[in-house]
Length: 109
Image (cartoon, rainbow, N blue to C red; front, top):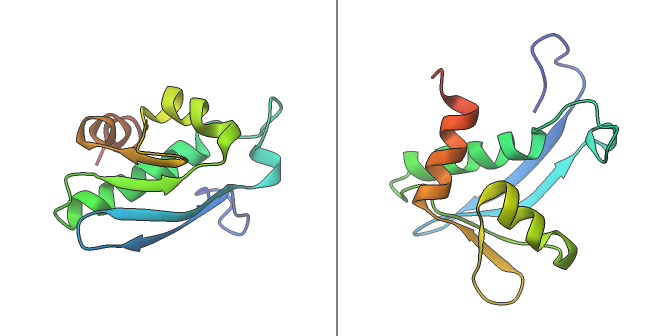
């Protein structure tokens, strides 16, 4: 992900796999300057997850996305993405949560 005014600087990135019934996020990373309390831009990761949800919808998966979370981030993802645990560190974003994210980051499309 880049910004319009500076397409040469990567703000964050996502890698995902399109499975038979959902999108699986293999990797989600913010640029180092978009981490922590003093981050340059807020919402980079949320925007990328919303994109994965949008791709899920385009493939007929109703926005379903899954990913494996680092243990220390599970509560954060529950709070910020409305993701749910699905056993161990596996988390899912269902249709309701996906719709919220898509609306938040892509409401003008």
